[in-house]
Image 1: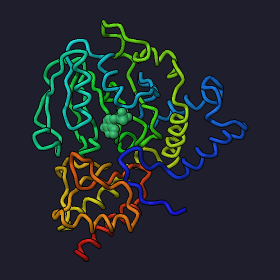
Image 2 (image 1 turned 90 degrees about the vertical axis):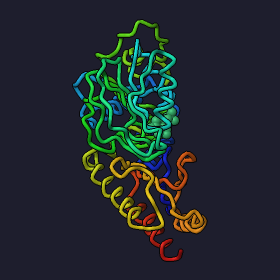
Image 3 (image 1 turned 30 degrees about the vertical axis):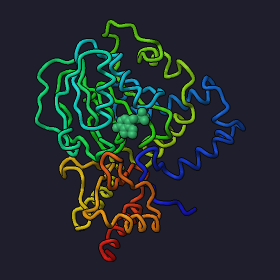
Image 4 (image 1 turned 180 degrees about the vertical axis):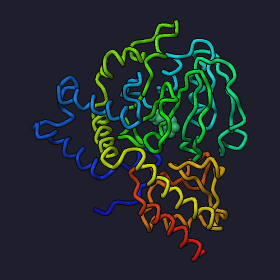
Length: 355
Ligand code: PMP
């Protein structure tokens, strides 16, 4: 099968073997004769899938037996913008403003209490990660976004604080080794490194819950979801199932440590070309560059149609930049093979030759 190179920012590429197994299971789940889409979420077969997905999420991040629960919820990372505040914000929380998604999280949290933006990179259209700040006060929690999908920046050093640390890891979870236990709550929409859109992973330390005085509607209460094992209502069964297959793929292939090595090679390859080729310039500050989303522009916009033609000819899919940055964005999630980055780099070299 001739598949285009897929640099889509999300939903995005997943391993072909995951797609193959998932499509088989749409017809016949593990020789049961029934589709994954037609069995009850209460059936032993699906309960096993949910438990396996939760176990994998905890074991791959090293959070097993450390007081964390893994939840698969709905509503995307966007619902977590308000659910985190609903469950954790009593008086005041601190937010790091590193881009569009942080800004949206701040907007929602403001509905529930006082928000202090402790640092922001808005002054330079979010092309860097602020570092000149200290978290001195005690906050209900401190919130950050580990990878800024739109701007192509990534936090390398997380805020140091004794307050609970909450992180939106939607676009780099399972891509690099970090000390996940430094966080009290991590959330991530599935549709990047985990699975199809529809499920949202929440890894939460149980001890931080139950401290706010407000009443929380059942569907928005992490404690309900924990009590009901993510099955208070019908969970997004297909997304959870494919996430499980993808996490199994990651485990089979050496886990986060091994995938990080591959991700480093891919990122190094694209950034080397961006820095070498006089026709391109990177958008993000070098030290804050994301390993997942490389953002770059042409130095001469008149070359756009030539480069777009090359991209089309070589089947480079999904490299257009987000409208707030312009230019190009190559998203290089876990399942993207090195050959795809090579194909992109070759097209950049070709442009230099023909320009
Ligand atoms: N946070 C980040 C870092 C994202 O990249 C995205 C989506 N691209 C979101 C939040 C919003 O996610 P969702 O569409 O699942 O609500």
